[in-house]
Image (cartoon, rainbow, N blue to C red; front, top):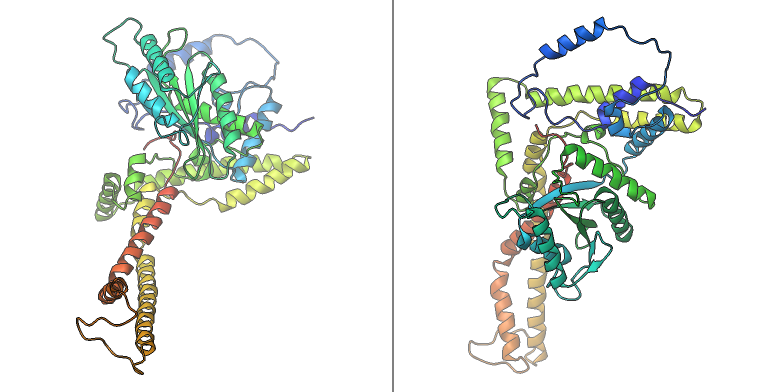
Length: 468
């Protein structure tokens, strides 16, 4: 008999691995008002007066939350998928990224998107094939224009005053080291299933350190229905994309940030771009002002309390699963329990993104020490270069038969030295007086830009997570 997690444990784990609901009372969605309970209480009162049928059936039925997190089926199958998800999370398997990048309005805008993702006009060596939902591969700009116009006319539907989006673009990517071809095959298979009733195009990009595929699909399907992806859709996209990658031998996982002990608040891409360029985004300035106000008031940041409560809930859910897996007669289940124990022991209370961004932006001690070290190395290298030039000049004068180093009089041309060489040496001597500070500053600037780029990559979080 296969191992089964209890229904209560499955529901508890579903609360960790399923996406949070978008609209909750006081969560920032809608008006923030608690829902009226009058009708609900009346319905419960009426239902309690109706006798329930006497049924001895104990068949397992997945809750909607559990179906969303682990799928629906028999209890054994749901348990198997839940255990596999927890095991991948404990091993910190690479997380897939699926993100909506924009919406296109009109045929011209759609054509511009096609040109961008296919690199049209960048030369034969740079242009990329555009895969379509019809199984074709487009490389010609004229064919792209015809397809974009078809999408526009279908979206308008004979309504010349329509202003809705014609298409929606998204990106699916994996970390560095993923096989691009298998990533492309998984994405095309995902698009064929998920967008089976609508037109779409896709193109593989390997110009960055991580391979990714751009997918653009028509907002109106073949039945005339228009589509607006929401948070649940994006979570389903991540799950199916990760499944397609695993089918091709690529380790991939799709879990919410809170299941991995990360602050789930979304970080805008614009803020990360500003940090990479060395600037301070308005988001960080607002966070710093907010933290300063709480310090002045002598109050603790409520975000930290929210994350602490969430952390306790996540740990309790994992520990409940560990207890049941440890009692399983299967050695595999017991090994998963040990892996989860190590994972839970390594989990720390999530650091708020506000605190993390301020901490990373500061770190003056390490940067000052690095500055001094780089300045010392540059100054020493330039001093050695200057000494070498002086030695070469002395050797040249000795080779002329003077017997001792001499400095030629101004305007006098020495034998064996060309005007070009003399001008270069004089320019080097002039620059050597103040080259050390300038070179050091240039190198320090490069080091800082490289450090900012790495700090920006550490800020990347899941796009589809709830916004505080």
